[in-house]
Image 1 (cartoon, rainbow, N blue to C red):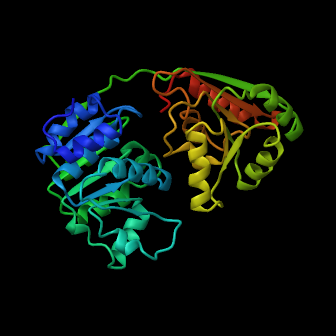
Image 2: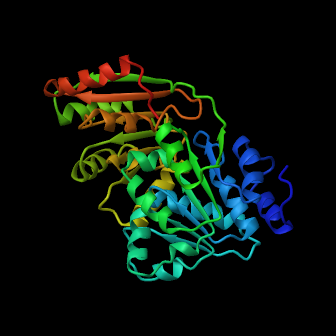
Length: 349
């Protein structure tokens, strides 16, 4: 049971079917409620979001939550809305890809959730006072590193003046611990999950070209499986979506879609209204869908790092995953590089 919380928050937790705290919530919430800084390492789907939102709402802190993607910002907002249902706490979102109109007002909310680029933009324009936040959270820190946001994070945190911090990450290599201790030397480091190798079967299928890929794709894709199909360009994403949407319930994700379309399509996939997502590498990082059965690389990724991020969308939360890659003879050099990586059992996360 959740303890030492206000009646309003307990009521919201009950409405959201939060009965018992998860491991990360059990360890992090009491420390954060005391105003202590926390670096928490816990796997995706372990309840990290509520672990920092509950203390923020309970203490009514002016909170800044940094997330790597717009999609994740909306996920955190939805969770914050549920948990603050009976509390007098306002929630704001500051993200790129939308109009600046109204963003200044969003920044005056009690809890502000944002992506680093737009947060810095508003701060640079004088429309957001970073020094006014009393609690600063960096969520999905390892993904922030992967996506090249680390300098932005340091810039933002250096202009904040919070009483305490929360850093939450699925993995905590040395550079992430160093970042956390740079801003909070006495931070409590909670290592909550023993690392278990991701179980993914890697399959490589030689093809002759686009038409052959389509035929082999129809043989591989199963409506009962939750699948992400990756392509390298927005144009190919549109073409593939058009070709297979007559046969399957498919969602589409790429950077030229409006934020409203992207959010709607991703929600359909996440909630199982569609079981197939055709996407560019937009979906390879920063998107939380933990029950993906298989990843299909319709196009061979341009580099090994991209392969790692793509296939890391499956095999999560102890589930076994499948990664299928279609390739032509001209792409055999990249396939050999990928196979070499797999043979070394390099961590895929």
